[in-house]
Amino acid sequence: MKILTTLLLAAFFNLAHAEYRVYQYVIKNKVEASKNSEGVIIQSTLDPTSYMAYNGGSQFVSIDLLRTWICPGNTGQRKDTCPSPYKKLTAEMIK
Image (tube, rainbow, N blue to C red; front, side, top):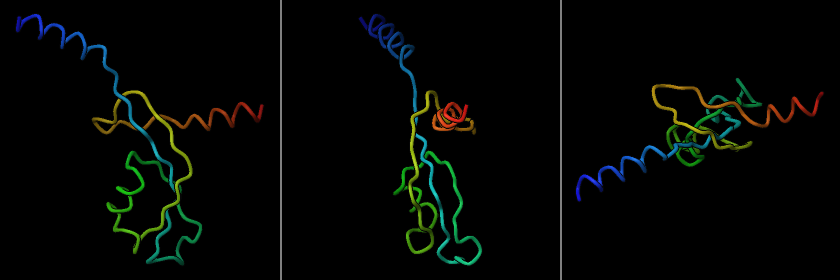
């Protein structure tokens, strides 16, 4: 019975697919606001609350969420995030 359970679990895990969410933010430094008043656009797999906490909290950075999308796979072994589907949409609209 244990062997059958193990085989069923192995088959189930083989069918499982990983995915992650990518967030695109405009980040503004509140401490050195004169350097980059427009902010910097970045992509991260951290949600807004976690990103803010990781980067010093609301006293040091201001973040504005621009967009978000889901990517297949994982970001293990320092893989880059998948490209934004919005770029493809924009490129198709320009044609």
